[in-house]
Image (tube, rainbow over all chains, first blue to last red; front, side):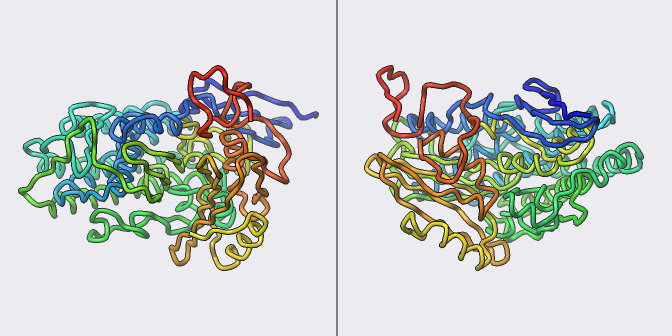
Length: 365
Length: 123
């Protein structure tokens, strides 16, 4: 049978944005997959060059609308590094808690949509969204906004933490921890889910390093690499947590790594809430017309985002970035798709794509 | 930060890879108007050491060798570099545009490109 070419997308429910895949198939077997990106390219890197530092966080949040706070925090930290502003101790703990809750929300959204792609129709999706809604409610209580928080300021947060931050945080962390067992029972006892993910999309460790993937995808291939552990920021070095890894390197392994990461996030949250000083200020500098001047030396800063390692290379000017370059983890992870899809069945493309957990807004920038 | 001549790029990266810097994080560039700087962020997973290799180019005839032969991860980053900075990548076939879906604007991340400037010429 001659090879046939099929266009998948640009609008497709499994692509989390606008992604086109050009797939060469021989019967049902995939010969080649070529991802076409750029439909969501907005020129953010150019845009922030024209904005004052603290005008940009809201653009940063739209890079990854599933976990907006993580990119926001990365950018604000880059500015803090350039302007040499210390973050207050209580605010550092508060940021850790918020970031880990953000990671949980992101992984839960991923879990729900991944199961939908998988044919595990709507039960897991509804459960995941129910629990994500509670996490988002918590973040809303802190920031005043449901999706796009923009509540980080240089040196801290924009307002005091709400009363009951610690108690509610601990309760929510326990709740999520309980629910993880429900998910695992629902999915790992489900033969369809296991059959559709086991041995599908195997990414060997040497290929993973060669292709520059990061985050859960890299850890599922067996490498113990996490920015929180290798270059700790805030108080991650004071907290004991595991970096979950798997060796099977298939879609099931990537699912398992993310589930274990939720458990580790819960652990970090509980530690951070207990270690957080009871009293103290968390407020950062208010946004003014002119902020503090930045040091012109270029800076590089890395963070472990829910999707992998995010990095900003910034050449600062006094009040604006002269150049801001962003390493999007999903950009590198999507590069691996062509390699992963060689020789699989057509229906498995969406398992593999889902297991990479991409967000196109961040890839195209 | 390791600043090298552009002729020595492939040799340097290859020796760095032998040393254990097997992971390429990002390739990017900065336009300083009088010069272009291309940066390669490499990482050693065993020792958690990061290194940046920097190459200076002249802005008129910016050209740099492809490093895909050493780091496969550089593939899309180089395509982005070519589109956004108008840097020719030696050793690559001209292919489909990666990020831009329109024609007529080249090198938007160069400082000479100003939004809304109709007089802007292709480099």
